[in-house]
Each structure stands twice: as structure tokens, then as C-alpha cells.
Length: 495
Image (cartoon, rainbow, N blue to C red; front, top):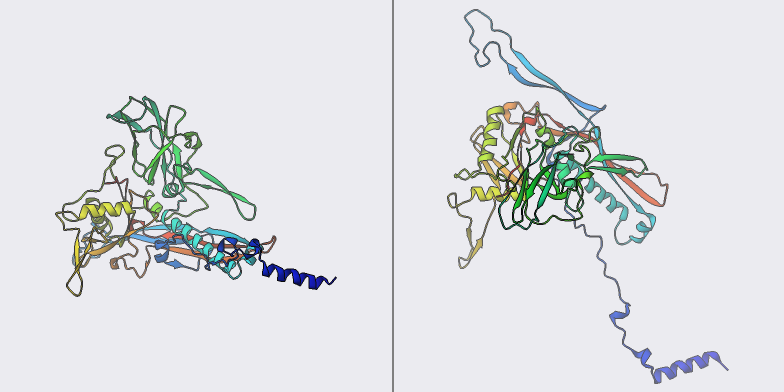
């Protein structure tokens, strides 16, 4: 018997009389297809750092802090506004108002790692190590943007006042009961770190890649004392609290006395409750202390520098108004907003300067637009005729992109209004990025700058496990030389 010949004969026979299992058509369902994977991975996350992109970075820092002396006023002899001197006599001697300032360097950073298997598996798809470092730097810059805007090393919110409660109205579905309400104030960091599902940020222990631990405060105040209010079926429960300078939001814990849970966060100092309370929410007992600041770890951002006592920044807190609604911006009736006009006028009267940019939330951009664009100030529609004249395009709605400030030297200033994803609803920030010429700005070219002791640097850690571990860090501080060049309007009701 010849095995080879026998095998060939069997194959020839199968081809002459094919079996159904062999002759079935091969389809894509068999999986015998190529995999069309587009390389590299598509980065579908927002990377928005407008303030970090424009604020000057100045190197050369040494020691533990950057220090400066500032002259804040020239005080004339006699009457400060008069310089009259009799013939042949001498004037009195002028004096100065001076101050010493300092800002302590801190470290900001982020780390990532890739296993050797991931690096090998990603070959011909993307350079895992290079892309990891790129994304790592972006994440670090996103955190730096938040630090420059709202970092908080020294402003503590303390304990809010006891809420003021009332109940009225009809048609609500909140069950009849005696309700207890507790409130917690939030810094900008606290507002960004908190949500209803996850609860209000208190403290977070962090274990570093080196195995050492530290703890960060989340940006929340201590909790207030509770207040109680009887509610009958159909009534709405209303709560308000004295606004706290430095807070951009408030968290409201509601329930029976001793069982209050988180039911709402607001960007005004009041809230209303008309529906049954949600279950499974964070208990007020989770709040045990003031966790609003991170001394020795953070630096004060622009907003914090403005809010701090003695900053001389313009701070306007809108009135409480109707609980749960607040006080919205006011139209001047001549194409502007009263509160913004007041900010501009006050900053000019006190310091002869103007913001050069307004940072707002999308809510406030809509509200500003609604206040200044009305039947009295001009139409919202714009007609655009095509070149051939046979058709037209209709552009609806619109938004205010610039705000004119007449209170400035040489005929006023057009100020851009820019949306910032980290500015919360209910807050408008005005910032003079540069001091005007009357401040001899060659001596103080920057209102604020990131002073670096060591700017961005990458550490490729020694291989101690089968991973490539990378850290990106910077040693820096935000030096705010002229906090009076900031203006903040907060506690703005939506509408």
C-alpha cells in the first residue's frame, strides 16, 4: 500500500464528488477578515486652557518663595491734591505707601505608566510611550488651568450661617413633614469636585506612585447648623443662607432632623424643594470640618486672590432675592447690563483701570445677550445676501462677543466676552491682563504671572517593574501683583 498515492486518490475523489461541508461559501461571518484599525487612537476629550495659554511664565525662581516690594501710593505733603508753595519757601516732603509681598513655590504634577506588554502590543498602532507623555502633559496643563483660576491655599469658608426656611404655595408633591435643612458652601474647586451622585468633596487620601500618601481638601466648608420647617402637602420648601465671600456654590442637605441628605447644589445662596426627596444620597454626617483650602500644597488662583480680604478687587454679590430663583442681572435699557457697568465704573473710580477680558459660563453669556439685545436695542436677525443676488441666508439668534467699557482713557475699550468651561453659572470674572499705561507698565508688565522655580520637566523613573513610569511636574507659583485689577460678580440668578 502506498499511503501517499492513497491520500491523493481520496482528495481527487472528494473533488469529483464534493461534500456539502467542504463547498460551503466562505463569508465574513467566518471571521477570516482583516481588522481595519485606524491609527493612532483618536483623542476625543476637550483640552481647553485659555488662561494658562495667555498668562506669562517667568523663570529664574530660587529659594522657597518669590518676594517683591510694592509701592501702592505716593502721598503728597499737606493736602494730597495740592502742590502750592509760597515764594522762596520749600514744600513739605512726600511719603510712600509700601508693602512686602511673597508667594510660596509649590509643585504641580501628574503621572502615568505603560506596561511592556502594552508597548509591544501597540507597535504599528501608535507610539505608546510618546502618546502617553503627550496626554500626561495635557492632563497636567488642565489641572494647572484650574489652579491658576481657582487654586486655594489660604481662603477658608468656615461655617455658613443657619439657613432661613419657609413653606408656601400649592400644587407641589413634597410630602407633608417637618423638614430639616443644612447647607455647605463650595469654593470653585469644591464646585468642580462635587456632584449629586458622588456627593460633596471633603478630603481625598491619595497614594502616590512611590507608595507614599497625602491628603487633599476638596473645597467645601463645614456644615451649618440645621433649621426646621413644617410643610403641608402641596407646599414648596424654600431655603436661603447668608452668602459667603469666596463661595461660588452651595450644597443643600434636606430630610428629617438627623437624617439630612444631599438634595441639591446651587450657584446662588438659596434653593427650593417641591418634589419628593431623592434616596441614596450623601448624608450630612459626611461633612465634619472645613475642607475649603490646601495650605502648604496649593497656591491662590486669580479668583481666590480677588476674594481674599484686603485684595481691593471689585466683588459684587447679588442679593438673595426670591429663594430658589435669586436675583438675575439687570438690563440698563440702553444695550448694557447694570451690574457690569457698575463694576467698570467702580474699578475706574478706585484704580483707574478696566478689565481687558470677561470670563463667563454659557448661562451668563445667554443672560447677558438677553439683557442687551432686545426690541429696544436692536434686532436679533441678520440677513446675508449671496453674491448672485438671487438668494439670501438667514442667521438667527446671536450672542454678545464684546462689551464696550466707556470708563477708560482715550475713548473707552472693547472687552471680549469669553466662555470658560470652569467658570460656574452665576459668576462673571473681569480681569485686567495688563495694567494700563498710566501704571508705568514697563515696571510691572504683568498683573499676574506664573513664576517658576523649575518649569515643566519630565521624569522617566527607573525601571523597578515591567512598566515604563513617567511623571510630568512643574515647581511654580501664581504671583498676583495687582489683585485690584480683578472684578467678580457672583450669586447671579439665572434669567
